Image (cartoon, rainbow, N blue to C red; front, side):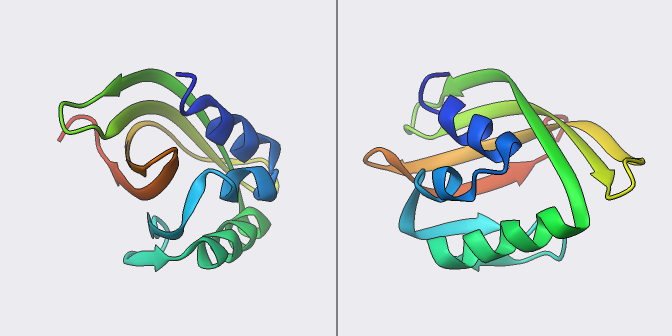
Length: 114
């Protein structure tokens, strides 16, 4: 949990500088809203700043485990609300982070039931 807590704490606090500090410069990030991928820390910064203008995301890690290949799998409770505070979704989501050294170089998002 110590490895991922700073990312999720910063994300929920909307501290974009602390979020991006968790990423490698060439991070590969999923575009959950539109599909495809976002490449590079600057592009991920812009992606999240844009997302936070439209919806309010809140993610709480519920389980963290290191996989045999070194990736870190995080089961999160994800709540998404529109800017008026209306609930859009509440679900368990699986985040799988690939690290290069201490920085996240890739994240994949999936359904924990799949």
